[in-house]
Image 1 (cartoon, rainbow, N blue to C red):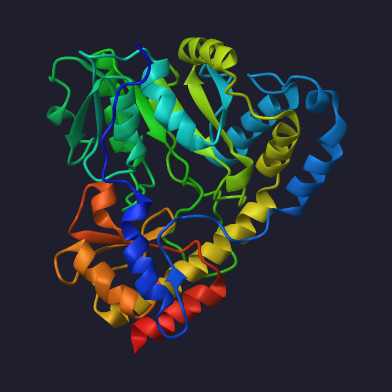
Image 2: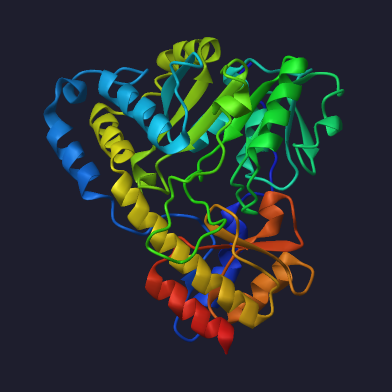
Length: 382
């Protein structure tokens, strides 16, 4: 039957008129809407890509499951950055062509259909809902997916999306809350889908010091105290787009329940969802280069601090997010589009909260350059 139809307010063309207004403002437009990295790709990644440019894995077909070196790098990264021993919990991994396709294809590759229900946060990344719709399954939005009573007894629940740190709100779940979700999902035979793409971008307890360590990361759904020592029924998604500025490389992976990964990998092989060979080498280098991750972490911490202070000066009630790369605020007017119009007049473009299920809010991205963030802060403070 193929993909089912989908509907979503998530359409960047809807802000085109606001961009025209912003471009006409004094000093031009400062785009704080899309979370696209602007900083250099680490040297280690670029060198690895160049070295692998004529490897057998470049002129020949690459492996869907990833090279032995990439798979080893993913396991090493989980151990060093997430306190997870993949082998001990019987977890497997498969690379994905960016995290978005991993999210969008998830419900389809898990064979969900008309009578199946996928739970997701009410305020969340829009592709969770779009992916569920593409599979023909049903979406159940929860104010808080950690409130397991809101979905545990709903007929047909087959999966639960968790996003910590959250895009757009920055909320971070504790290990105890995540463990409660995993336990409740297992009771009803549902899969936990944990989107942890911002896991190393956490700010709780950040001191604005170079000594802040991003490897003191947020809890992982595959950590032993969360998953009770087993990857059964748990899948974790991760991306190098933000920690290593590799959005254009399309480097991400899914890790978890080995039986689910095996089935998904078989389908991915048949439809050609494979990371190019040289990019697999670059991805392995990025995962091992944790020093570059620390440098990027410091950049984002500084930008977020400047942005939060500026938004406060403009009249928004906000604090440093617990995690992720965005400042999430309630619209001063009560409506995101009205605020978008006012901000555009001073050349600033935010992301409307309606895209994420909250039309009364806005999201400001800290992925812009230092210069752009400083200029936005100056305009907001006038």
